[in-house]
Length: 394
Image (tube, rainbow, N blue to C red; front, side, top):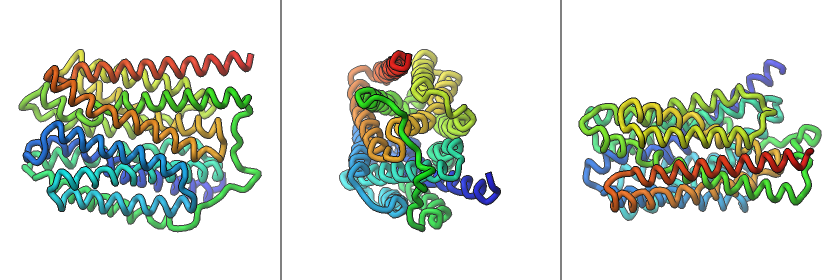
């Protein structure tokens, strides 16, 4: 690879990572560490917090559906999504209205999904053109970076007795700075692939492509439900189990570090390894992490659980998007949108189910067990998909 081409590939990968740090790490997941602060401030209760989370995931679902029908420059939609994330995060700090917050979190979900789908598609295609597809994992370090930054910052805010509104304002400023840093990368027109370099879908019988697409879509939806309860309520769960401890504020940043590390490790896996088997392994890791937290609600249990939940988090996204390209080639954007939409459905169901089960039992144990079982079921489905394809090739 030429030096200039190598530098351009890294510029694209790093810009994609920072883009997702804004859209996902801040636009979506800053809410998780700020939720205990909002509960402490008395501006919402746990049920209202669950509905705010659901509103964001509903917006994510709507945004993913929009990505399936929107046409035009990917870079333009990326810039719109980044700018919207900054403004909507700012609005959460400026206005203290739960009703308005529902609207803002819904719109933030739409912006997150659009930015994610268009940035993923554009960056992966650009890296393929630059003959550096393995750097795709760098892009998915972004959400972990955003989670880490917001988690550590929130911990400092708690120690200094900040109000949650100050946290939202601070994250709006952080999102603005990161957006300014990558703005020029996404300022030009979308770069298309020369016909000779375009990726082609894997040669499969049409009926098998349909079955594999359906299976991947269902499995990805199960992943969305499987992780979301922990990802939404981890600080709250840890505070309930470890009252008075300072550790609960650190489990979320640990999750963020693990997300970035897992995405980076994914770039070192051979690209010819089967994505379905990689996904199944990731699902089982996350299920194990959830169950460890249930079985051992201690500092060690929550720390190990955070690591095992975080390591596969965005690696799952990378492998799923790669499998979409395996099935559809460079026409995979609509499938990426469909996957993101079904992932959003899983996320929508999780928080209200969790809060309802908590009201009945007084803890998160039952909802976490349901989440872990869902991930195991998804791993089983992916295994069956792999076996089907192997039998078809035999």
